[in-house]
Length: 26
Image 1 (cartoon, one colour):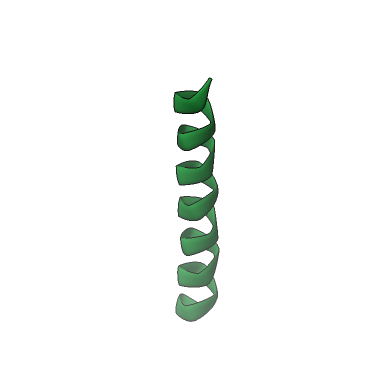
Image 2 (spheres, rainbow, N blue to C red):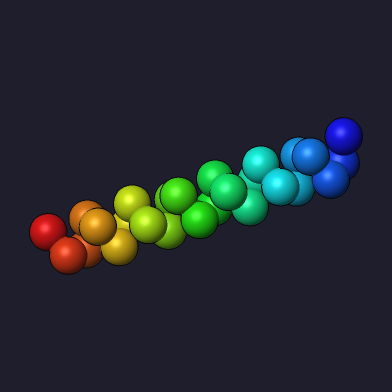
């Protein structure tokens, strides 16, 4: 469960970073 949560958190973090970069480019 811990590994699964860590993987999900990593994916969410990457998505958040991408969203921030997109907003900055706007």
